Image (cartoon, rainbow, N blue to C red; front, top):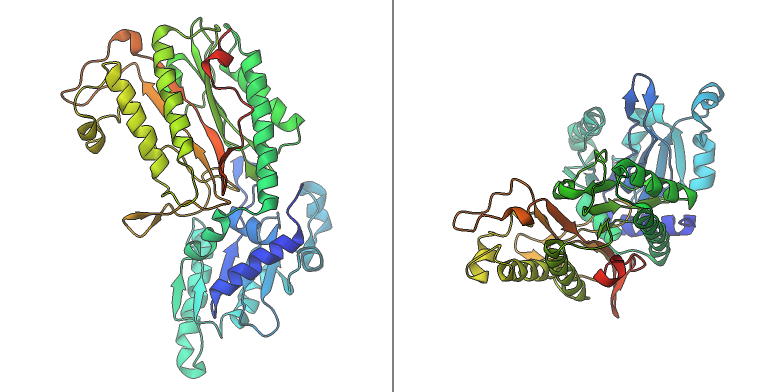
Length: 439
């Protein structure tokens, strides 16, 4: 299961339609050193991969729809048998042209020499000023030189514009091929969650449960984890990005597992919380019922045409109502929501886009006030939670939290495809109803 070269070409064509007389420059991801001369496993930049499918470092893609001969240009590392013996085969200049459909390919060492011909007749450069400060300077220097020669040529880029507002809306709407890859990523993720829940027992360490998850990801053909897996037992579940995973599971603990598989760079992202002893305590059950109700009601709001924020607002209201019923919040519900007095219990948003990145590319708002409307092909997470940390500090005027509630953290997360027929839960294979979690 891979994206076809025909689809990559379609993506580039859609981008170049939006560029007009502009030239876009997209750089590959850098390699990163773990320690000394040991590198992390290479992970390509998502924008670069989305447009090219090319998975090597030290590469630059240029898109110049106005150029008479070359619209898609790749600068890559040349073949080097000695280095390839150590670090793996390279596609090379000729291979990049043949396999990836570039109109022209050059060694990366020739970037400064060749790039000006793709800039001299454009009206602007589309480029995202990222973390590679050296390459930022390369692009800025070329832009500056082009502007200096403008009076003699009468052409050249007069503006440098962020490519994200042009490119990322394309990434927000998933193709059928992308949806198939997301289905595979979420199916493997679901299998790993189910395996972890069956394996988890009192006395196990969190890292042992984590190992079962990682094992399933790779066993089923995944690239590995989409992000560091969270296996949080007891009060550790109140730490949103807990990744130590080194505590021993105790009797009556809840275990919160937030883990997803990456498959061909597309990602799953699932969270489940369950009682390791097979039964919720009364307090755990009461809070779990609120989070589950909030999630189910929020998912109902993932409808074509609804503003993105609607499912979050629905989850917040349900959580606030539930906490008021339990006496953990007091006061007028509208005031509590407006003044965000629920935030000691629920401090994050209810979801995010999902795709090539776990927190995927795309905008949530159109302007300062309006939320983007959901459309078919959007994929997002819905993940409300309640976290009552051991040292929780409620807002002034709110009640102190009795000890029996402290140390309970709960989150439930599913991956949702927006369709004309309503929300499709891609991760429904992982149980979340109380009757399915207790034994």
